[in-house]
Amino acid sequence: MKVLLIGSALFFGVLLSTPCFAVEQDSAALRLRAVHAYKLFLAKPDSSIAIATSILNTALDEKNDYIEGYCYFILSKAHWAKANYRLSTEFGFKALRIFENSTYFYLWGETLLALARTLTDLKNFSQAGAYLNRAMDLAVAHSNEALQADVFRERSFLLLEQKQYDSALSYSNRGIAFYESVHDSLNASILYGRNARIYFSLKDYKKSIVFNQKALQIDSLVGNMRALGVSYFQTAQDDYYLHNIDRSIKYLNKSIELTGAIGYLNIQLRARNLLAEIYFNQGNPVQAYKELKLVNQLKDSIYGAERNGQIQEMQALYELGNKESKIKLLEHENALKQQQVTNQRSFTIFLLVSIVLLLLLIFVLGRLRVIQKRANHVLEIKNRAIEQQKEEMEVQAESLQQLNRLKSKLFSVISHDLRGPIGNLQSLLELLTNRVMVPQEFLAVSDKLKANLDVTQRTLENLLNWSLSQMEGIKTEHETVDIKGAIEESCRLMEEVAKRKNVTLENLTKDPIRVVADPNQLQLILRNLIHNAIKFSKADGSVLISASADGQLCIVRVKDFGIGMTKVEIGMIMASQEYFTRAGTQQEKGTGLGLLLCKEFIMRHGGTLNIDSVPGKETTVSFTLPIAE
Figure 1 (cartoon, one colour):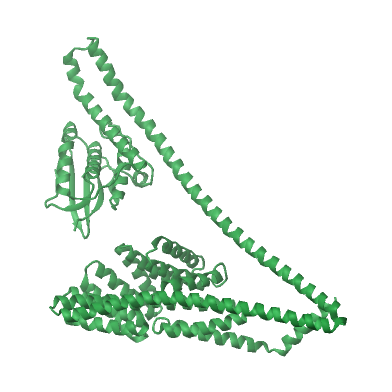
Figure 2 (cartoon, rainbow, N blue to C red):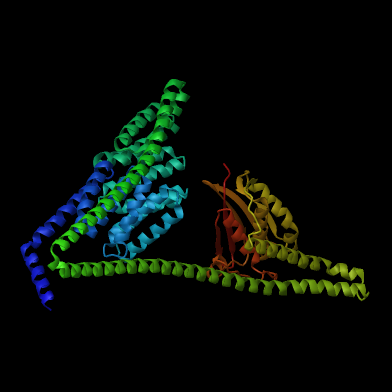
């Protein structure tokens, strides 16, 4: 009790002797310096690193978690600006450990975005996408539009790297709309540059230049040296492909000058490569050789920078080991001095032994506490891994259950539909064998029997293909195919089926269009869609098949003027791993397996299936294929 009273008195004495406003003032000053360091990470990344490192040392001494995490975040961004992805990732994870599951949700989300950007640059797209999803969940949970816009910004870059240009452009434009509404010129400029890269990738160099000019104007005003160097390089690329060679050289030199000032070696490397190509094409091999020599030096610098980083890391570990040795030596010397004092002053032995025992007890308790924390941390990591594995197993189990239910339904329907035609054939053959039916009577029903067997054969083919696709036994071989010729071949194969209902098949494709597809799978898609169109057409009707180019895609359409479908029926068809079937206009039966195969094979080609229908009038089924270059 006396110890507690003495401790409380000392605590309040220290508290009273230290003004509270001084502590708050020091913390505010650190925050201001940190904000200043953050503002410099794009224009002067080295200065940003130096300031953040200085603030970090102070924060560690004062055990200020917020400032410590903020400094790690700034260091992650600044090293990313210099394309030092190893250090950027290292500091990013340090910041994430501090902000994750804290009240600082905005910095938590921004740290996730910083890691996602670095991982995208390292081509780790899956992990980058996971961090983007986590950041979006945070933004939605806290209704924070600014964080959502930043997610759009980084999502557009990820989609651009994955060559999903339309989606990348959509996210970029959503981000621009927000940044312009709040007058955030810096981020708007970044997305102008993003749009320029997208249009460059789409080979629309004129639009790319328009967005590059917007980015250049704003980057010059806000001092974003990294983005300015990148924009100059992108503009030079556009001018090169538009044959504005002199302007391209001018912008390349500006890009080299700016990126050299901040140590951004990757863009310097690409700019000098392009300069070498230009000089070589101009018949100036001497200048081209000089540029290529500088390119090799830059490659060596990048390697040297990575190697120096490793040397510095090892040196830091060595210095740390020396410090620990000195500390142990000092502890040993201190123990010897204490022992000498105890020998000289025997009357203090009991007190010193008590102190040593107390220190040992504190040390043991401290060690136990550290061990317990480590064990708890390891247990927490294992629990997370178990939970993740459990979730993955539940998803896989659900997928297998759905597939098993679908398989059971399909085999039930198919076994019923196969039993009928095969049983009819068996009965007719028995009648013919037992001479109950004469050959003339057999010939009279042979057409209908052949039609039933054709349907049975098509059902078996679809079943085989579907089974192989589920067991991954089918490989999609991408070849260059003339879609017009493929449609004509499918129409010839389906003529006999169409004649039974007096349905006319028309190929409206005028010019050949070359697409990238597997010929056999393409034929299966076309035959199934044309057969369905015939099935649901009325007698004396027509089915129109056409193909047209739309940008980098070819759209194939199959249109009939039959009974049509409702929105509910379309929804059932488009639902994943579900099948839908209904009788045709002459009560033709089906299993729905054909459409499942169509969706599967269209997806393997990177295309999409779409259905438009007016009940009682018409139905148009379309799908897309990539056009061959």
